[in-house]
Amino acid sequence: MLAAGVRPLEPYTNSKFPWPCECLTCGRRVNPQYSNVKNGTAGCKYCAGRKVDENTAVEFMLVAGAKPLEPFQGAKEKWKCQCLKCGRNIEPIYSVIKQGHAPCPYCSLRLLTIDPVATMIQAGANPLEAYKSVHTRWKSECLTCHRTVFPTLQKVRRGQKPCGFCAHRRMDVDEAKATMEEAGLEPLVEYPGAGKPWLCKCLVCGNKPAPTYNAVSAGGGCAYCSGRAVNPEEALRVMLVHGVEPIGKYPGATLPWTSKCKTCDRIIHPTYGNIRNTKNACVYCSGRKVDPDYADSVAKSKELRPLEPYPGSTIPWLIECLKCNWRGYTTWTRINMKRDGAGCPNCTTSGFKPALPSYYYVIENLEKSALKVGISNELSGRLRNHKSNGWIVRALLKFENGSDAYALEQLMLKWLRQDLQLPPAFQRGDGWTETVPLTSISETKILEQAKTLTSANYETVALGSLNARD
Image 1 (cartoon, rainbow, N blue to C red):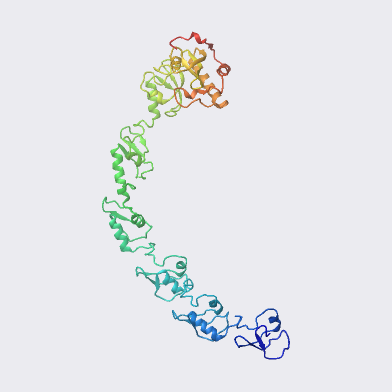
Image 2 (image 1 turned 30 degrees about the vertical axis):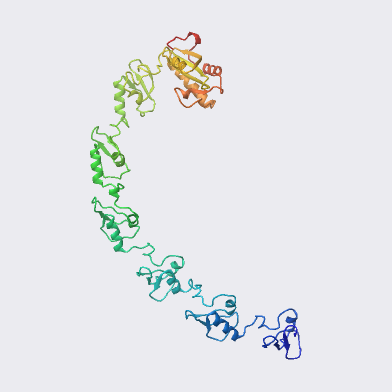
């Protein structure tokens, strides 16, 4: 015990009993156990820091900035004190303050999330009434704009600003009206809220838009003046100017508006947005759409008899030519062409004639590394044009009726594209859609397949026997 720095004051009795001693360092009376001291525990708990003398504790707290208000309770117990800086009553723990922490949680800002008043003041609002609960609206004064506001402690603790005006969540009615008036809008109803439609009168165009305050404050204004909205009366005027008489109420700029064309008396369904940006409002008068009865009358005027209802402008239409008795498919686009015999491939002044003797040919272009299949009427000059463009004729089959050559061409293209999956040899130029790469197949195989697919009578033509007009 002497080696541990304490001098026994009584005879030894037992290793487990407290043994009254005097500390040779601080002179205090202590009662260590012999067994603890033998195992390494310091003899004096004061010098070892396991116990604090009240006077020492009081002196330490005063130096730290807290004045004790009651006797010392122990190093790990709360100790009622008064902060020498802010005057608040606090309860620091001596052992915690000994570790370097400030005794006053208010002055050290540790209680800003605990003390309601301190939290609100720190957030920028001074409470004007006693605190009730975290969910109750708390009447306060904004320390920035000095308005009376009613934040809740819960929202402030979550980071929301206590003043809705300063945070732009709320708007002063007078300020909101002033903003609308600056944008040329006169409010007609009470302020509904920043994000809700606010009925106003435009001081420029006289219409009654309903923009939101948020939209106007961000630079918006009258939807009518900007073209985002249309006055029904103005829409009606525009439709009439374009030769269209609306039937029913204005549905909106992008919705079909049932109307009557004042030129052709047909019922149409244009949108105001399209009418405003076009010169010819009627799809029939502009040629964008064809009336079936009109299509029939045009076909008959060109001595063509439709054999089925009108299918559409670009869809094949089965007809019979009353001039040459040809029967087959054409399109409204071809019938409506301004050329003699338009609609009938036999009677027209240009194009392939299915009733005339024709060739099915296979030609080769070494420069383009391509083979091409096709058809041409006899003496039409089609093959001569190909030769001038670098093509060499490799095979010819002659049919008395061009329709047989045409049928064979369609079967061969289906075989090359769908069955063999061969792509075109190139993507531009006359007839590129009937080409295949030279290295993918031979002209001999193409000719053999053509002979297999056709059931019509044909003649294999010697290449040297071609007429110069071909």
